[in-house]
Length: 168
Length: 379
Image 1 (cartoon, rainbow over the protein chains, first blue to last red):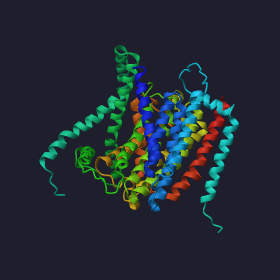
Image 2: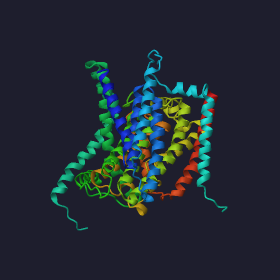
Image 3: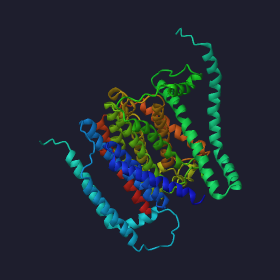
Image 4: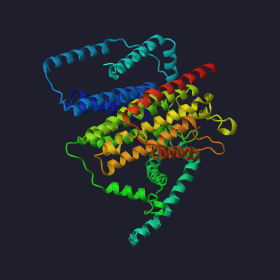
């Protein structure tokens, strides 16, 4: 009971994640692929929860599902239905694609197997939010601020691009 | 006006309306007694089962009870909304089915269940069917962290507020899905408008929530409430009275954002009936339409409940405390939501965005800034 429950949840969501990711890549309908990404992101959040990274799981849902995915679907829908574009994906260059993916797969597997992973003692489950907050505000304050400025610039740029030009 | 109802119908409604009224009263008593009941159940479970099994069973019972309550609430709220609307417009509202129309929602519910389930030609059948469930899931999952009393919450998450902001975004994806899958331009416009609105208003919502988090120092909803306990008359410590009165602004902003997030009037442009037929649920009929309705009223109650937790002390109160106090406060806020709906005209899309980006967000940042400075000064 103690281990069976998490096991079942892990394998169920692993299957869901891989299946939905497969649809994202191989689906013919772009909108369906975009919605299928929802299941992929959600499963990733579930894995974060199972690893005890509760804050990260919340952020995963908030940023990827609430932000990125919504914008993605929004963009796809805008171009698809309103401009009557045909957004079917096609498959071409099968052989080079397969070779490249195979190479990536081999490299990743080698890295995973060869790396001497350092084993740390089991960290007790607990709230991670204060730790993350403290780290962001002390040790990693420079990267944090740079990311903030970058996002601000992006926001200003977007507002600049779509503003109503009264001077023209 | 000369309309003679069949006898059987009169008999049934005469029989059922006292039952429904008594049932509502009984439900209120039950809500008041929930802490005792929960303690009793927990004791029994811990005595008879292993710790893990007891925890699993306790959360299962909690989920069941919450889903039951949240499933019943819309039935009451829809009737309530129709009565409020009617009285604001100097009408009587539903009067025929049962005492003052209390059975009207049940009649409508039965009608919805038995209606033909139409899926239009050219619709994306799978996504069309999935969308109502996703919307409902987004609305109902949020209730898992809503605290009704000390220790009386389905999941006492220490990232409660983050979870709330994250899980409600599932609903906006569901609305987009419904709008797209319907293969109808009005539905598509409705879905896109709602997504644009929700994405925009998520920002001030998160900032206002953050201003409360900064004052409390925790994302846990129970901690938010315990920070508001005590003080004069057990209500002087509520967040709305703190931070030099600036939290009143935060409260109003959060309420506005709540209206926008639940697509309630004056922010109901996603389903503006004068422009878009019915917006994202134009093509839905029968029980699938009913699910959207359930989700909307569930979300309304949740947003009101979250406002109560953040600013009005949750289940604490001047004379009594407990789930009933929380319930009454939340219903009062739901009443204000309905009042606004039948009082204010709908905003235009550009006005909606201007309100969000030019007024709500700057004020939200102001509240956050002062809250952060005040907490930094206090510690």
